[in-house]
Image (cartoon, rainbow, N blue to C red; front, side, top):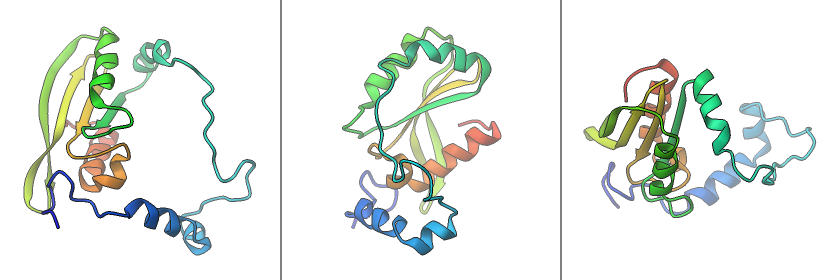
Length: 152
């Protein structure tokens, strides 16, 4: 077993167990999941080939955080970093570590680049594609800071 905060400190099989748990009727009722809606369960179908042209408009109107797990084999972070940089926004704080408090004190959560207009790109150290599943403590810290407008 890896110590908490290590690269692969999440338990094997977690995705299977989570799927089974969330499929339980009593769990769905407890978290107020509506199953009587069309197309339940959800099946994703790509409807747009390229969303990049929409991002400047989003950034102009909203605070935007784009994040990636740094060991995501589905969508590797260098590609995400490339397209966020490619938007041409002015960097106000370039590629620096961000920290969170874990089970063993203050740990590096990953790296962040801050741009003008409250736009940020952030990585989560040791996480694959499903950041909240693989790294719940840094994911919660990241989300809380985003929602509260706090520094990463």
